[in-house]
Image 1 (cartoon, rainbow, N blue to C red):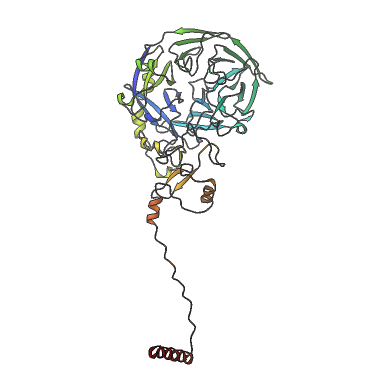
Image 2: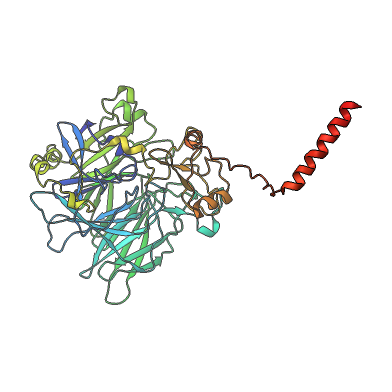
Length: 517
């Protein structure tokens, strides 16, 4: 057992709580970055390169047949074995939160595409689901069960937002436990069915689920409504006969309670549970070994590592399973004492038997060849495989004027992703924005500019240039003053010669009269 601190060399600002690690053979990939992807890595998926205690994230390509996959935090992820019986080459991804705090209800399948010039290329496709579709959620679990030479995907738990008809400006971002329904999905036909299990009374989230053949064990988890972390273990058996599936549940008495733990697999029937929380304010510093047999589960306390002071004293921590009994752990840190720009300390905890297995699987000796192959072409401008290897412009992270709604638009910006509520009647889950036509142009929040709803509608319906508070004076100074129209003088009518002479003679006589008088 080893606990080794690693230095995040590049792309450190992308790592955040809720990320996922996907292992395809000897390759490990990072998914769930902070913010929306940039042009330097439009896929938002990175190859993990761990050598000499240095952690690097290298941009990864999707093939041209892939669908768009947004960055998702806290999705449900599970491996899908292939029919060939080789190592896992596919992953299922369901739900999760996008950078805009929207919840996803889609199901994606990710796999490794055939190698081209030793280039690691991924393929992502969306699976269409019909029937009882699970609502958008996060913090749930997903497993694959096998029964009678058939398989099904099982989705359970999680949290979601209130229904739209119950959401108001005060509770817009409030979450609730999802209904304690169990969903069975047939990937071959895309059919989904929901099952109400009497033994599952309360919804739970951020739990752990372990599957063996046709049985799933649900351990731990947090009930948002009751604020409880129960010790019960739910043993769910899924039978897949020719007709309708049969789902049964048995409640077992457990000895541990936790939430948000990391589960790593050390052998086909053995798992290790690391980290998590015992309560809202207490981390869980103990480890447990879980052994599964055909009809039983055994949980034993496992030797815990010698945690560092940063881990012991931190209030929060997070991480992911790197496979083979190895986990990646992150804790908040102080930038003044860190060699990188990251806000976290990162550790690699190896609980497996082979101390060097993790380094061998993540060293990737072929990376040098990968970096030099396949030069970019301008004709591939709009395909997924445009990126500059090893170069990710982290300075662009705060520039989300096009793809992000949660920018700091001005010095007095009042829009916060954590506290924002709809202000205009046209807003749903994003703040309204308006484009400033100053030099270079940029987006600002309409609410921060004190625009009334009628004025916002007027500007959007008419082709009118708008200038924000900071540039309105500059725009006025650049305006050319309007030319004043000349004053129209009334036209003089032509006067005949005789009337004019008569008028002059009368004026002359009047002047002489006054002079002699």
